[in-house]
Image 1 (tube, protein in one colour):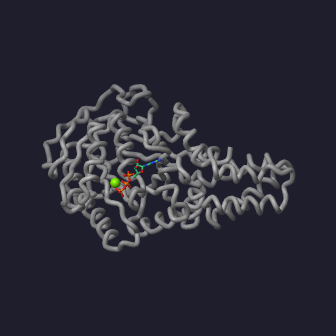
Image 2 (cartoon, helix red, strand yellow; image 1 turned 180 degrees about the vertical axis):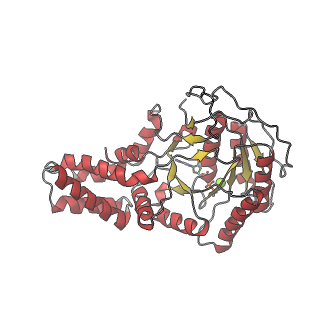
Amino acid sequence: MFSFFRKKAPVAAPAPTTAPSGPPASPAPSAPSAPSAQSRFPGFPASSASSAPDIFAAADTPPKVDVGWFARLREGLRKTGGSLAAVFTGTRIDAALYEELEAALLMADAGSPATQALLEELKRRVKDTQATDPAAVKGLLVEVLASQLAPLQKPLVVGEHRPTVMMVVGVNGAGKTTSIGKLTRHLAEGGCKVLLAAADTFRAAAREQLAVWADRAQVQIVSQEGADPAAVTFDAVSAGRARGCDVVIADTAGRLPTQTHLMEELKKIQRVIGRAQEGAPHEVLLVVDGNTGQNALAQVKAFDAALGLTGLVVTKLDGTAKGGVLAAIARWGAEQGRVVPVYFIGVGEKLEDLQPFDAREFAEALLR
Ligand SMILES: Nc1nc2c(ncn2[C@@H]2O[C@H](COP(=O)(O)OP(=O)(O)OP(=O)(O)O)[C@@H](O)[C@H]2O)c(=O)[nH]1
Ligand SMILES: [Mg+2]
């Protein structure tokens, strides 16, 4: 079992309790919790007495214990990797090589601005290092890609606010509920008290799906059939505050950013969360399916314009994803001077298949 979250300070949260799904929970009296001197984070020693605030962070240097997920990422990106690798099988570094590489990057969904930026920086490094062998250029491309993706790598920190409130958004079937489920398990196993809000209220299956994850992780859920999603979320945040939860995560229904009324509904949820807790939501996470290529970038832009995203989860990179879209997202961030980080990538349906994003690992999985 690998550790997903790093303990930076003693945990003040009591042990998780389970509540059945049902109508919005009435705020329960919150028992003041005593700081624990013992680590409840698997794999990490008990921290010494510290006055630092409780902070849980996704490991910024993810442990490399499970090779399975990395193999799945490599396998998922194999096709793109194959086309990129083919560029470097010749014996000369010439204009034809760069042309082929440009085509391969565009095919990999990197988009034109990121492709140009990658090529420019690669040529500069080739010149600086006086590389003469195409294989060496491939090595340099790993470096260039890793450095251009690096701004996307940022740990998700929870614990600075209590509760830390996250709303999770995205198009239909992107992997929102599954990612929330996995994240909840990791948080709960790391000692966080989590409460889920089933703000996808109209589909019974959606509520049930989230309830299954809540049950598995032994965390509370606020859920009400057919209720206004904003009202359910308000109740959940209020209950999270009253019960001394560390994290409240709202699962929303899938929608296209072009569906104006549904985007308005998300804005309402966001506003209402702010009414239940000042300064919240602390995270507005967009889940995007890595298979959707350049459309994923369009989704990032549209949801960001509507809600002001704080982070991304890119799922299904174990499938037929081409992977280049992460370079496009990084380039877009660089151009606008505000990067929306990729907190996690999804490489399958199992718990360990949600991993903190690591720029170098990703570049290596794509190109090695
Ligand atoms: N292969 C693979 N499948 C995934 C991944 N993440 C999610 N899925 C699957 O994608 C499907 C849709 O996932 P959900 O979590 O239900 O997606 P959602 O965004 O909540 O969907 P809606 O609520 O209907 O909008 C499910 O079958 C998941 O198991 C991933 O990283 N890899
Ligand atoms: Mg869902």
